[in-house]
Image (tube, rainbow, N blue to C red; front, side):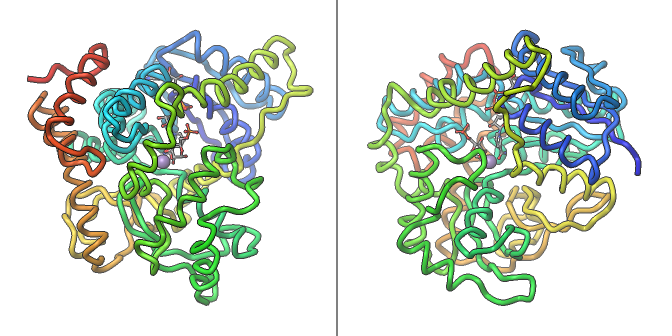
Length: 442
Ligand code: NAD
Ligand code: G6P
Ligand code: MN
């Protein structure tokens, strides 16, 4: 089997060590000859990559390791770009969450004003990665999970239409792991699903076992009372208290459309006030992550680098991230794996905007994804999705044209924002906070 060369863009990410451990655990499925770490913050990347180098030396010394902030070095001679950058880092995530909360509006990194703010920063960063890849390794594929994935995917569709980029989200994977647990299955791969929506905005319409037997009744019986709450030790990265609350809240989200199973993120659109009320405006998710995951990962990484050994280290394989290997294998070996991806609609949902970036099951092979037709969707979901897709498209147009007006419209149109006056006040605060990142708006 061919051995692959991979660059991890956003090498300094808190998820990088878990992904490296996962890649090393899957070398029989996806052989690797080289792993490169690329970031634009050298000091941050060094903390993570120095530890990853020790891990790789111990587990697979034959793999060549490169750590760099130079795009040419990073993007030359690679088969896959695994991209998880966060433009503005946690400091700006904190602003994205706290500014809306000042107005009693949902403060979230991918939904509502926070997502739009992050989107306006992320688009340029991701387009830059696409351009480096096309310049230095034109045959490579980018597996992108940089957020906000919905807006980033719309931006790459529109501004880099021929780019070999696959946009994917891990939320459905984590939810399917919980569903499998609810159903008493060993793995989510024992289920076959139908699903449609936008990223962080979708519904499962059918869940069967591999023989086609309907598993929905058993799931519904659990979800109507408990949401996706289970024994959370299997929830991978989504184990902490705030995620457990999210999985419980699914009960209320489910109640609105009880013939389907919802994505957890719908709570921000359907119950925004509940979310605002239970959020501490001075200590948001960004603070939890900085004091939790970031601190843990960085402390462990520093210890590994200092000892030049992983002995006693508590960094764990990110098992749930093995979907990234499934995706890379689908491209490398034309496996025809069925996976949920964020792709251009183009008729897959027959009564929905053809150019919308939707999330649906796709068959993935050497030449990319083939979306599976989901047919017509009902009025409730269609109405919600039309509003949200308009928000996402307006953000990308605002970025492209440098248009204040369009971003104001996008904010006004979001279900999370009460009116145009609040939208304008929010926009003016977000412009000020993002002045080092956003294009100038006129
Ligand atoms: P993080 O801040 O720990 O890591 C992001 C890294 O990106 C940082 O080291 C930063 O310096 C780097 N970076 C920022 N701008 C860059 C640029 N222009 N070029 C190169 N590097 C750049 O963040 P994290 O919490 O580990 O998350 C990383 C990303 O993955 C985020 O976008 C997050 O939203 C996303 N994510 C997505 C999913 C999904 O389901 N799609 C799941 C988990 C995380
Ligand atoms: C899920 C979503 C991601 C998001 C992450 C945030 O995995 O699918 O898109 O980035 O949650 O998690 P955090 O722990 O950083 O709040
Ligand atoms: Mn996601």
